[in-house]
Every structure is written in structure tokens, then in C-alpha cells.
Image 1 (cartoon, one colour):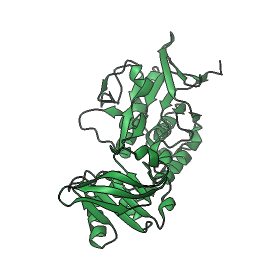
Image 2 (cartoon, one colour; image 1 turned 120 degrees about the vertical axis):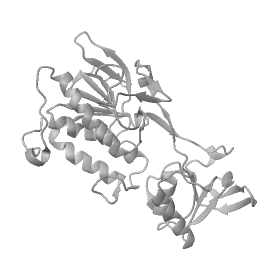
Image 3 (spheres, helix red, strand yellow; image 1 turned 180 degrees about the vertical axis):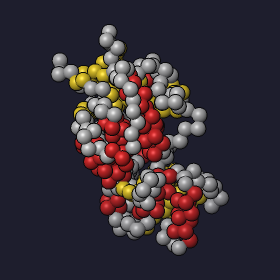
Image 4 (cartoon, helix red, strand yellow; image 1 turned 45 degrees about the vertical axis):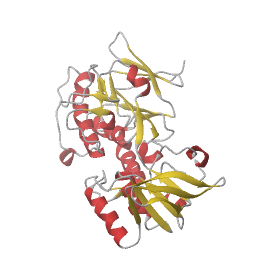
Length: 339
């Protein structure tokens, strides 16, 4: 057996919410260790869209997802968190001393009195459009994520979708691609109103071709994508030349082994008490996109708030005999706080 890793809070998920948890816990002198199936910290921000601009982080009119991760990592450096990366959280059991023992798929054993589940959407895979030969063009013109916008410079791009990702990438890639077409099966979009207005402005200026009430039904090419077939509700079928087709229909979340830990789950998300985002299992908290409660919004900044409150209750579990004294960092700073 590998050496057993012991800590105060074991955080499952090294995305932005998991990383910020380390900061809030560190202010309370609580040690943290993070587990993530991905080989690097950052979660979806690093793995799926590191170059995507994010507009709703307080204090940042715009920040690239990858830069936000780097800033969070720098912010938690003083607290020296541990990381188990490239390994998925697997089995969990309660020990006689009250702590949890969690073993990863690689057999690494972790022990802690508190677990934070900050796994974002959990295990996830892209929702693929129902196109018969789509697998044949994967990595040959079909991309489900935009990892590096420069890969699309001076190319003919078709994006499909009506949510924030489709809108945001259409706006961003309008300055990169040779031609860009956004296709959506409805006239109404699900994304932020500001993004919808920007896309409409770009379309009016001729910088984006906007096709609504339509969907991509076929792909063309011989070993490499050369075009897409579009079915329009009123105009019928037509073709669009394309070097890349990027269907952005979201992700299919799967809890994976976490779903077998006795947690209350509703539609693939973990139910929590909004007092402190605790689950029905004492000592386990769920924060970020993986949890659900009335009025839940899946925003990074909401996850930051949830992490902050969860840490307050975690302190009482780790140190039941100590009094929790809240202090403002504007007064105390973090000098001397680091564990």
C-alpha cells in the first residue's frame, strides 16, 4: 500500500471552486489535499477551454479561464496544499475514529475528517449531435471543445449551439476565423443577453453568419471535414463549406463512484443544505456545479460563496473544542496565517 495521505479537508475536484476552498480553509489554518482525475489543476477551465474569456468574475472585466486558474494557484501557494492528480476518487468508507478513508482508482489512500466534493459536473462527456458519421470526423475537423483558438486561425468554422459556450466562442473566434457560421435550431438563445446582443451585432456587421431555425444533419469530406449539411425549417437543405465543425451542446454529467456513497442525489446532482452546503452525510459537503438546491445557479462565483460557508462548518468538525473567530483579510492579511 502507498503511504496514506492525511489532511483536514479532502477536496475532490481541483477546479476553480476546489482551489478557492484551499484559500478559505487556509485562513482558518485548515490543511487541504485535492484529488482530480485530470492530470493538472483547473478542471474544465484548463482541460476544455483555457483560452475562453470569462466575464463574471468580480474585479475582472474579462479573464481567460487558464489565467484564472493560474491566479487561484498563486493565491493558495502560502497554504501548501497537496495534490493527487490523474487519479479518480473511487471508494469511500468511514473509519472508527470518525474520519473518512478515500481510495483512488490507482490505490492511493487518503484520510480526513471532512470531504468537500467540488467535482464540477462530475465525470463528463460532450453531448454529440445525432449525425450518423460524426465519429469518423472526430479529430479530423470535428471538435467538441475549443482548447486553442489559434488552431482555427484563417479557417472556415461552423459552430452549433444556443448556450453560453456557443455564443462566447462565436464572439471570440470572429476575430480569428476566416469565416464563421453559428447555427442554432431556434431563434431564442439560452445564453447571457449581453452575449446574444454581441452575436447579433457581429451578424449585422457581416462578421458572423447567423443561421437560426436550422441544424447540422450531415458531414462532408474524405478523411477530413470539408463541409456540413444544414437542414433549415423553411429554406430546406443546403451545404456550408467548413474546415472545422464545433458542436457545443453542453456536457452529459455523471457522478461516477460518488453516486454510490449514500449521498442524496437529484437528477445527477448532490442535494445540500444551503446553511453550509452540507450533504445528508455528516462531514461531507458539496460545492460548485455538482450540488443542487432551490435557486441554484451554476456560476463559478456562486461556488466561491458556497466554499466559504462550507469551510466555516468544516472548522467546527476538525476542531470541535476551538472557538471560530472570523477575521477580515483586509485587516489581518494572510501573513502568518499560512499553515
